[in-house]
Length: 118
Image (cartoon, rainbow, N blue to C red):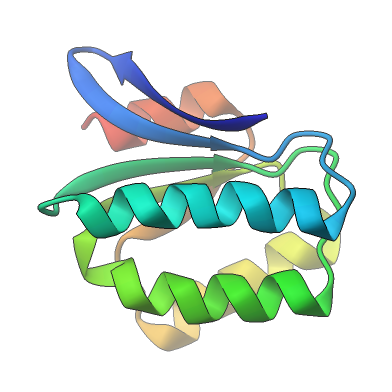
């Protein structure tokens, strides 16, 4: 869990790992750490977020929307892994209706890596 830089095919990716996080305060801590890095970036960020085994609640969703809006212009690509069921449907609907161009959901990290480094 946590935030770290990884390198795939020579490209740096900010990896935000929420896997297994079930407490809201832990999720928010990881989110805020990632946002600080994104704020400090010059832009063109490649972002990979893994939500496998997590539970989101209203507080986390509200905070990710609020903070995410502040840094959305810094992202070149934003890949999400670990969503299933209704969460994946909601994200797909959001992407489709909002016209969001840099956000995609993937079943595996390997698929996300391939898209991020295209």
